[in-house]
Image 1 (cartoon, rainbow, N blue to C red):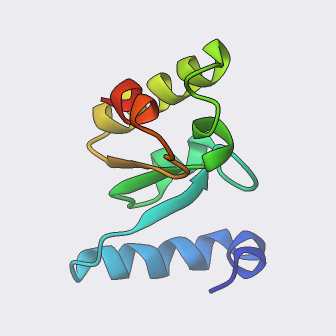
Image 2 (image 1 turned 60 degrees about the horizontal axis):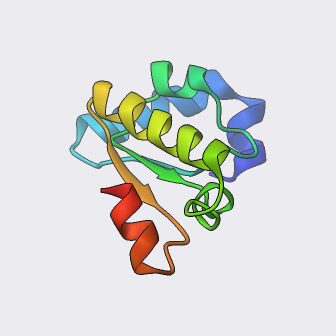
Length: 99
C-alpha cells in the first residue's frame, strides 16, 4: 500500500494494519518527523517502531534543536512502548549522543 493510497482511505488502511499487527507482524513508521508522519499516527496505528528521519540525525552533534527533537521523539516512542531507529548515523559522536 503506497503512501498516497493509505492517506486517501485511512480507515481501510487502519483495518489492514491492525490485521497485520494481530498476526504478529511488527510495523514501523519510516522517516518519522517528515512528510505524512504525525502524532495522531502514534496514537492510532499499531506500530512497534519509529525510524527517525536522517534530517534530524545528521547534525545531531552541532544542533541543539535537533538534539531536543530527537531526544523528545525517543522518549515519546519509548513511553508508548515503541522501539526507535535513528537513520543517518555517520559518526561515533552521534552514536554517543543517541545513547
